Structure formats: structure tokens, C-alpha cells
Amino acid sequence: MHSLPLFIRLEGRPVILLGEGYMADAKARLLARAGAAIVGEDAQAAIAIVAITDTAEAEAAAARLKARGMLVNAVDRPDLSDFTFPAIVDRDPVLIAIGTGGTSAGLAAALRQRLEAILPASLGNVARALHAARAHFRELFPALDDRRRAIADLLAPGGALDPLTEQPDPDAAIRSVRGAEDRIERLAIASPDPDELTLRAARLLGLADRIYHGGDVPPAILDRARGDAQRIVGPAPALPEPGLTLDLHWTA
Image (cartoon, rainbow, N blue to C red; front, side):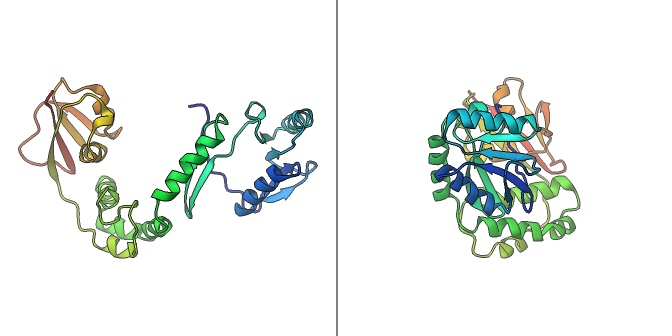
């Protein structure tokens, strides 16, 4: 991983912006959307943006700012930058950032356009409804694993609150959730390629609390399971254990 993605709260915080023209204007609009206070080079700030066209001037400005201990973004000059700006899909409060480490802004923009077409406008309302329902979920599912599994089922493809479909009433979908059920799901897999997993298989692997499997199941398949899921070599029990148990069979 070439960079660590971070979301930084800039509301009311100073950000130095140097330069003129369309590059500086674009960054000024982005900072304004985030609520940042745009200041000049002499101000105190933690981060700075250099949107200067002349290469020598941009290099000198970046060096001065870095010498003061700031993190610097030099627009269109990734070799001078401590951080880069991603392409952003905004479904407030949901933010999706797509970065390429400065190697191809065009690719990031193309991916953003695809995601804009896929993600419904109601996605932000789904996030707010889930936030408001935290106490409801804690009351309905006191155990963390049960709560996590119930929310995952709710948000799964085809679920009552599938985030990739338009949700006119997310609160009603949340109210439809019922108590947890201990169960065993059986899953047969024939391909060693995890990219060929069906949606059902990927979903069950991501939800299972424990996985019973034979010793011949490829590690790449098991790697798609939750990191904290138990992996047990052998047959699944006849009766369900607490939570979701996955009985995984390798059929190749």
C-alpha cells in the first residue's frame, strides 16, 4: 500500500493555499466544501497546497513549507507531495475516495464516474438511519457478534436495506429486523480462485462466526472469511452453535 487513506476534519482549520488559476480555484472550492479556512503562506497551519504552475517556483514553495513541518500537496506533482487528493464520491455522510498515488488522475476520475452511477442518492439517508438506530440494535442484539451479523444481513445484496438500491424508507427496513438465529449454512466450492466466488459464498464467508472445512480447501478461499472467524478442520456438528456456522465443502 503506497499511501494510508485518511479522512481529515478541516471544519474551521487553517489550510495554506498558494497559487492562482484553475488549479488553485479547484482546490479552493474543495476546501470550502470541507469547511477549511484558506490562509496565506505566513499563517500557521498543519497542511498546505501548492497550486503554482511554474515548476521552479512550486518546488521552492514546497520546500519552504515542508521545512516548517507541514504536510504538502503540490498539485500535479506527486514527487513533491506528501499526500494526494482522491477522486471523491459524496453521499453525505458517506464519502468514497479513490486514489492512485498521483499516477493517473484520469483513472481515478473514471472510477468515480462509474461509482456515481451505481450508488443511489439515498445512501446518505441509510447511513443516518443506521446511526440513529444504534440503541435499537444494542437492545435487540446485546451480543456484538449477533449485532454485527444482523446488520450485515440487513445490508447484504437483496437485503431489506441493500445500500446499492434506492431506499425510500430506511427506518422501516431497520424496524423489520428481528432477533438473531443460530444456524448452519452449507456451502460447496469448486474453484480455487476467490474471484470466482458467488455472491452467496462471499457473503457467507464474510459473515460466518466459524467455518468447518476439509484440509483440502485452498487457503485463498479461507482468506475471504472474517479475520476473527474460527477455522476448524473437520465436519460440522449436527446442531447449530451460537451464531452462524459455515459447513464448507471442497468439490473440485
